[in-house]
Image (tube, rainbow, N blue to C red):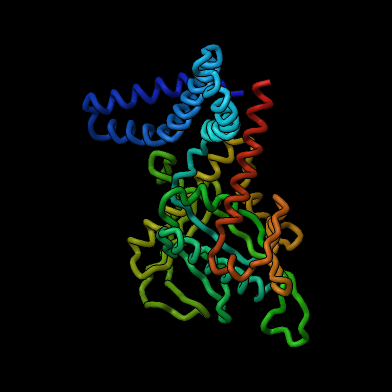
Length: 354
């Protein structure tokens, strides 16, 4: 059922924003109004389409009483009535509550779980997969922290991804990813199971989170690369510890000033995620629960190489095109997860309206 009073409230708010911008709002006020205006515009467009269809239906029904127009109305009514369910469904989706973080850039963190060297190599495969997906979307992808193994696996990686609606497209990637394949080091041809954890956090802005300088311990240390080789001989790497939560972040570029900025960026994202978790009862308040322990029995998705199969266990989606997915072709999975989340939100809204 479409909440007509809410449609009117949204339309009136949209008109108010439009009038306020036209009246000459400037600077920060104009930017705030413009942002809300842009967010509401697609919703208002759906409202207008729904209202126009309702008017067309009313006109067609009225024409049934006119002998000269009745035949035309009888032809038009079935077409209009057939459009109604599609227009209503589109409007219901537009009215769903928006995650305030959906439009934000994101921090991507990947770490190997169960499986030793093979888990680290799989973590590197996941990193490449997300890099290629970002490239296909035209997003920016910048490595902030990268620790590699001697075999080319990932010990830990943190990346900053920028672009349109990055968090909305990647937020369902958080969790334990399991791989089943024959490692290159396996001479007996046996299939091994290992895992890697992924966390996707919305980037925090200064207005989202405030950090007290007294809550921080900042240490500098010597930068080192894979295998312990020194990148340079200066103490440029930065480690920041947030004392109240125990969160530790590091950045190891050659510029100490840049490292501090990058580490603070990651810290803000993690603290922002904790705050979102605290305020949202549907999510765990413990960030560790988001990515699990890394044990192979906890998983959101399985990548089975012998069968070329990918299975997302949350929505029982199975695809037999694993290679394409690992090349960054993630849209089918992301679209399915988004549609499932929307369906659950719609069910909750309908239940509340009963």
